[in-house]
Image 1: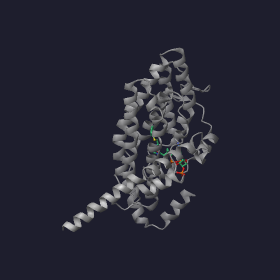
Image 2: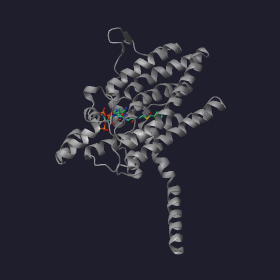
Image 3: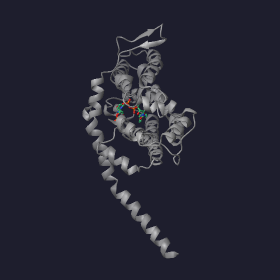
Image 4: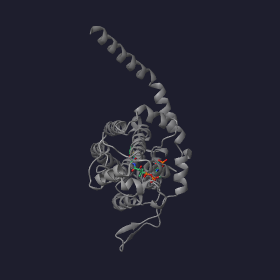
Length: 325
Ligand code: BYC
């Protein structure tokens, strides 16, 4: 339906303008906020950047949950810094989306009402300290795999936001792997926790890349516009190829009995995630969907007095300035 809407919008646009726009994209030029752009391009970016921003904000919840329970002061400081980075990423991305003519309030309203999505991964619970390792290693690892190519995306403000985000995500991934190394080389109980975390986060991490290419609604158009640089399956395969040796180094087992190095293709063969679970999570039936949206709605309601106070203060300052002129 979305793809049809984009097509029908394009049919009302000037074919010459559309052709010139596509030529700029094909030549690798960046599109900037004041440039003409097809309505479909603008809407697709708002959807993707908005969902991405929401993922960063909601993504703070499963890790924020462990700040008070981190095992050492050092681990607490590191985790706190990571969670704060995610807030920063959300803010750069909301700013990038605002250059397309939406406000952060519009996007926030659509998140809080459940109209806009955020990454499926954040609807899974973080049950033990080893999950902080698995999230950093696998979830941030998957995020980097997806976001490094987005530094070359065609929309200037999005591409530039990605540069800083990717630098920070690398630190996040390393801190996660460092936790996993400690746990995997620790006591038998710690090792068991590390394996259990890998077992629970493996398939949800594979789902982060989106549905199989054959079921991906937006990939073809988004790739033609260079809003996406790779297909979902390409990035998923790269992630598996990179992560399996890391699991082996930890001495942990990837929970996939069909996982096997394929000499011919030069890649690992692996099992697809359970796509019915993925679509259930997208529909709101994941283990933590309700809890996550409730937490964001509560934060919005609790912060009302701050927003109102800031607006009242700005109005007072404006009035004082006018009176002094
Ligand atoms: N979760 O046609 P497709 C982070 C939806 S934050 C939920 O392939 P597209 C981090 C998709 O939206 C990581 N929904 O879509 C933060 C579409 O539905 P709509 C976030 C998903 O857009 C804190 C439908 O399925 N990263 O790393 O071409 C702490 C069909 O899919 C998901 C980004 O957002 C999913 N996993 O491709 C730690 C990166 N997958 O919108 C870490 C930017 C698909 O039509 N985004 N859907 O209702 C992208 O690269 C692309 O949007 C995706 C999906 C690859 C995710």
